[in-house]
Amino acid sequence: MKKRGFTSGVVYLAADALRSMRANAASCALTAVTLGFSLAIFFLFLFIFINLESAVNKWGDKTHIVVYIKDTALKDGVERLRDSARFIPGVKTVEYVSKEKALEELKAELKGHEEIIAGVDVNPLPASFDIRVSPAYTDAQGVASVVGTLKAMSWASDVQYSREWVEKFSAFLRFIELAATAVGVFIAAATVFIISNTIRLTVWARRDEIEVMRLVGATDAYIKIPFFIEGVIQGFIGGVFALGVLTAGRYILLGRMPGYLDFALSLPLDFPELLAALAASGMLMGATASIISTTRFLGN
Picture (tube, rainbow, N blue to C red):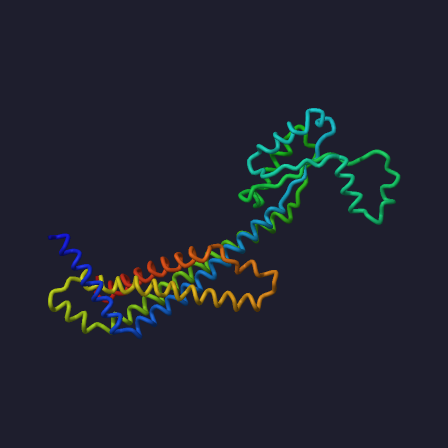
């Protein structure tokens, strides 16, 4: 009996929420549209941030270290030396460049000016390892730790890397992360604030109805639940609307952006996943905003 009573109570509250939404269709539509635009802006920023971070990490793959190998160490075998470098923390890949390959690359770079090395009979270039570091080690401190370990190797005659590039890249990466975090937090807070106040206006417009419910003995929880259900429904509608806004906005921006920046607006999610993410986010924000608004209005 208790279960049946609880179920009938939930059904009644849900029906009450739907009746209220029909009676206040204009304000509900405004809330859903506001939430939709807010979600679209937030997700657009989120996608741009994800795509930029991915691009920055790809730039980080350019951070490489060249380790020149002593001629006397080559007799121990290239694979043995490669393994000793490969297992250093922070090392992603190790590519061996033989003396012959190094000379071929030099000749290719000097194409048209071969006379510079025409009189050289003996290959003066050393063999080397071209080492690329893991993404977690692309900052100045991480690269320095890998370089320090490589310099301690008995077979390494010299270690070179672009220290200036690494330091500038590391500083740029920190700036991107801090700026993106600050903007993301601001947009998320602004979204919740806008939605919360929009729903609060809806609650205020129905203050007489709420006062009557209080007079007849309705508990605060009983009053809040219909608004909570409304917030969830409005959030779902807003999420679906956000998908349309995001798709249209992305299409418009792609038509006005240089081609080399198109990557910033690529979607990291498939269409069904994006719809699910927007709908779930809208429902969560709508529910949260409803709880905040009704709690403020009721004073507890």
